[in-house]
Length: 253
Figure 1: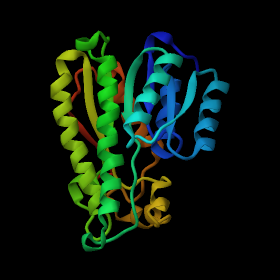
Figure 2: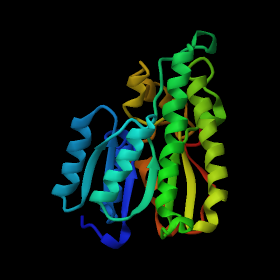
Figure 3: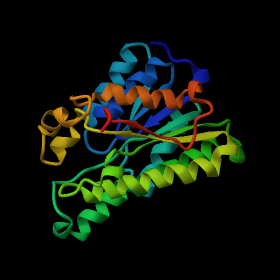
C-alpha cells in the first residue's frame, strides 16, 4: 500500500466500522489518502487509521457528528490542513433505530433519523462541492452516497423512517449529479441490501443478516467489502462516464 499524492484524499463518513471501514481500507489500497470520520467510536476509527499507516498508506481519524454543521465544517478544515486536495467523499454515516411501526415513532426519533441520514449528507456534500467543483476553483472529484435497497422496498413494520431517509438520498443523488455534472464532479449512490455489518445490532437485531440472508435471491447476506468495491469503483476514473446512477448491491433483492 502506497499513497499517491496525485490521487488526492477521500473522506469516508462513518468510516470506523462496517461498509465505511471496508471502503476506507480499499481507498488507501488504491493510493488515496484517507480521512476516517467517526461520531463516537474513536477506538475503532483510530485503529483503522493506524492499520492503514502501518501498511504504508496515509490516513487520519476525524471526529464529527455529521448532523452538526459546525462539526462538519471543522472536519473538512482538518482534512484541508492535513491531507492532499479532496478528491472524493463517501457519505456513509447513517443510523437506524429499533424496529417499530410508524404509529409508534416519536418526533425525536424522526428528527434524529433525518438529521443524520439526510441533512448530514447534504452538509458534507456541500463542503465537498465547495472544494472540488471547477466553479469554485477545484479540479473535480466524485461523491458516493450510501442509500439502501430499503428506499424502494419501504421496510414496512420495521424501519419506514430509515427507508424514507434513504429515498431522500436517492433523490438528492439524482439532483446533485445533474447540478454539478459540468463542474467536474460525479455523484452516484450505492444501495446495499442485507449486509453483514454492525448496523443491525444498533437497531436491536444483531442476527438480522443471518436470518434474512436465505430469503435473498442469492441466498446469502452480502459483505461490507462487496459494497465497498462498488463504492471505490464509482470514485475511480474507471467510472468516468457514470453519474446520477443508483447501483444496487443487494444480491438480487
